Image (cartoon, rainbow, N blue to C red; front, side):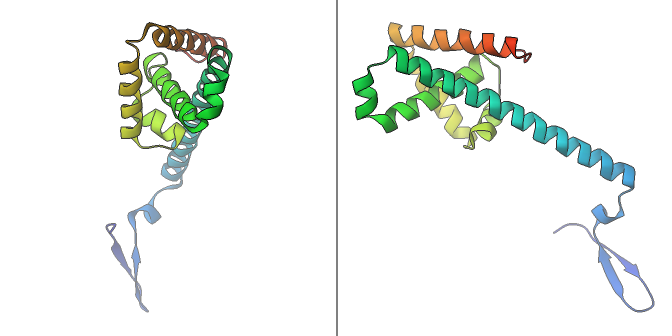
Length: 147
């Protein structure tokens, strides 16, 4: 429960939360910070969705289309895991930022990164992930976002 202070008046005592006593400058600064946070989140979401779509398109080009049809859900999970891994490793995003952008929990992102890292022992998979990393870095560089 937030700290409240009472304002006495002849008729009644009205509890006021500290946020109600902020100056207009403090409120404007807080509102600007919230808008900046929302803009940064929107930027991260766009970057993550671009990486995810890039991964899906590349998998469609090099992957076995029959396998993708048979295991569409599994393929979708792999695409998401690879995209989260690439966002973390190649684009230096934190687990928390990636989780927020994908609408997932931070531990889910951590698990996905570990799964992809373990699968990189397979040379073909490692080549694929390296390709996605290079393309994601290039796309972000062209878009003006440092990788």
